[in-house]
Length: 398
Image 1: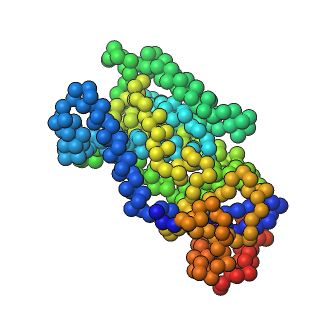
Image 2: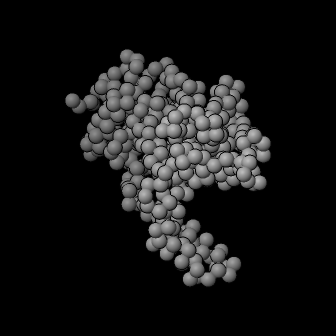
Image 3: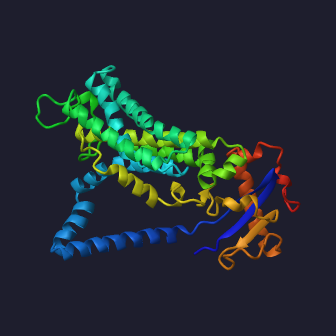
């Protein structure tokens, strides 16, 4: 493991605040850990199947041949993964600000309802049906997340309870519509009428893969830009790691939390649109099929930056050592030197400050430069005051 080195810059603005820049573990080690975890899980699955009497040859055909060496199998995996990408992104957006959105599944149902309203009532010209269905699905998903967000930021109501209960309300609302006014009169089974061709996402021309993959790709790019490049992304990380600190420097914690919750609901709603318009071609009560809770697991497994864990490291720029970590709740009380630099490989408890050690001068200057560049590129809120980062240290080099 690469030795972790940290440098912290502190300043006084009513109280003391710390920011630390840290190195990540190497990419090769990170990929090795992921691969080992996958092999471990696959091994347990195979052991269970063999224990239940399934032949090794059948397992090999299903897990390996059909999944990796068969066009139909590969396309099936891609199609199934498209809504999972969207719900995983949605869950991660909420979790990064400590908004535990358990209502992903309900927001998916509401997104499908929004898309179905456009389709069933023939709203808009044919060439605009799909964009309108996507727009309404996002809006309906956001609407379903709005209530818990307001309850959270205004009344401090536990969002786990409110979002979970809204899952049931959305599900039974769908059932009510499918057994009632939206039931397909040509079929005894309780599902909605089929969408017209102009209301379906077409296939891209390879097996059964459809243009929902474009929706997912655009969502990935948009979320990446939001969390890694936008001011909202930077401040939402700050809020997720330590809301007390965010409040202390004047960040609108309630607005950021609510905004992240709405973004989460919108992404979940778009997943409902993709399933309804590209897989089912109608509204059904089985369309979510546990995808909402799968999205929660995906966000958790995505890593620390998903926002699941408090006090996690947060990437700042493109460099290998570009991580920023807001301190924990005792940051206001703990005395610290103006600058701190630690070799965390050999000094994990950070007992020896190397900031003034000539042997570590190059590392210290590099981290100073990166922190300066990041704070200026992101227009860090900490720079709003008269605080001058270049004056923090008398050792500053030009």
